[in-house]
Picture (tube, rainbow, N blue to C red):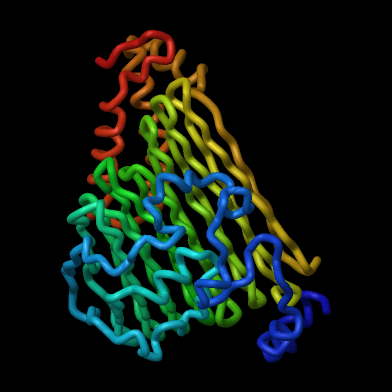
Length: 402
């Protein structure tokens, strides 16, 4: 089938074709709701080889998850509601989510609280909805499950904030209805002892638009696994990430974009900075273009800025393409230190070395912050970057803070 015949035939048969062509991808393990179908990881598995399992406080083994170590509160504009629902509610699994690791399966089976966040069809929120989860005790492992449903042709911005001290495993399902527009922001601003293993599964409807902003600053170990699939042609997904790792901190982002429909788009941009001995970041970007996904466009990139010695940034982009009838696909990954030319330019104009380094880091992040397009967050994120920089003297060559 050529792209010129796509509109007349492929749109009508893509669902049937998807079932026929669905094969197991090496980029994503086979899913199961049964916990026993997911062996306890050893660290030798591909999806666990970067994660410090010993620091997960038993989330990957059999630590009890029935604790109540995280509290929740919401600040909601008109048009969105939040309620607790039962584990047997039909909305669970409506996104097509199936756990692909043991922790996600344990949350599905053991979460004592299931939250449903609903945006009414055709609603247009005049302000973001803020949902804050505050950790109360990191010695108590807690499981949370949330389902975000955005009705057809609605437009909304929803912000999840994670704060305090906690050991949390969570599953978040997101359903973006036909023609809807959703910006979902996740901010990990934990205390230094927190452990968070999160799973987000998003189903993007026909002609819908989804933007996910994943911001990670705090915590001892934070591992977020985000998957996107499409419920119809014309869907678009933009995945943005910003992270800053300090000494001893492990921040891991894993993404899987599954192009399950034709004429869909995805664009991934993640940027991170590292400073301090033992700071470790991991970015895994996986994109699968299935046989039915003709005429799609996808691009993913990851950039890491290393500020001091003793840091490690792992970055692995992957593309798996099952059809040649695509509009475009690509990826890029880079890890490096400061741009010496930028530093020289700034210092030649009388700016101290420490101040020059600060300006370079802000420039590195500012473009991404502007793309978030949530004014209520931009100033806070800029201030948080400044606070992270203040934790270290940024003296690659003996400079001191101005």
